[in-house]
Length: 107
Length: 118
View (cartoon, rainbow over the protein chains, first blue to last red):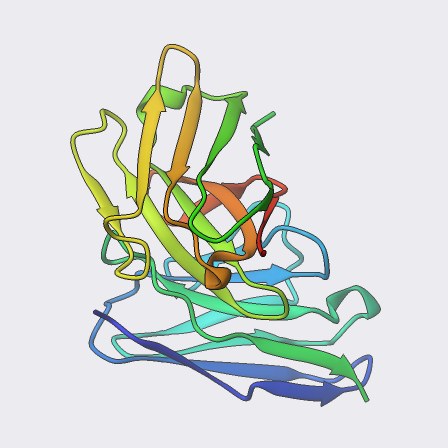
């Protein structure tokens, strides 16, 4: 099974900061990677698919990059609405393994 | 508008059974693979099960294999998860999620809470 590892687990940042979250796959997944945002008590929301494609309606301050085994999610200027937990997910296989999550909190 | 609405969650004793449902609307249900994903309290997301659009292909996480059964009724635009031999560690919010054309999970339901406790 493909394992996904995110870092950091928690990130403290201020409004306006540039934030980067890293996701590593245990084997190559080409560009079959998605990023989700989840707020407390809510379902995950798709942000990025195919490693770098922005889902419709998602603000352009979110961007994704990478291929193979190394991926990043970048928020160019953190906004108050962005404080949440972010998950990466590989979908090259039927299982769709998730990373353990990165919580972005207010500094 | 795509909508996925889960139901059927609740409190069940260890060893008991429960059947979850997910009612889909706003899209051609029979054209999409569907999945169940769960989230234990305070924990991350865990993929549970996958079913292809025609039910020809079904997969389970090792943690639920042999105890859970996924199914769908395309005529009713509904997805199901039959959960048997429930354990404490199955306590979680269970989400149904649609796989988009490129197989990422593009729409999620609001979730239904399953609590396994004596």
